[in-house]
Length: 245
Ligand SMILES: [Zn+2]
Image (cartoon, rainbow, N blue to C red):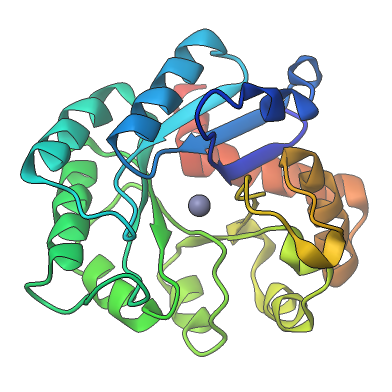
């Protein structure tokens, strides 16, 4: 594997974006669902492109899932590489104990724990709360995706969770500061496509991942090739590939 985009979404039938990152170079894309339809699409893509795509299924905190949706996720998780994108975000609705968001997050974490699958957590402005909830579980592996909270960074690292940097690392001094404090063995890269990066001219896609690796190498004062290898190995460990051999 040459590069891994550990977190992206495919909307509708927009598979063209997958091929902005040549599969024949051994790249790997981790496609996450945000609801039932996009989770089903991720599973279909992984079936069509087994060498290129790993599917994560889950309901994003922006969605208000029904009980049936959560039961579907629990079942679909058996066929998926992991659970995501799940988490808490007060932008969309209340996140406290007893809230619909909290209930959906807990249900999906329980499923992931039972099936020993890795999870991808969205924690924007609810970092402390997410850490408290995650502390109640014994999970296979946790990725705090696009993590940007300096206050709880050391706790995330202390828990042994992975965290991912995306194209915003290229221009955000805060993220560069955070990356410098990370143990490189806990860092993954992502594009969160189709998120478009205005400071980069509005582009989006997995093809930005090598630039993120380049920036991490610079921040860590490592050779590009060493940083790339470290991140690929981390990704494989996160996904559980090293155990499979
Ligand atoms: Zn996302």
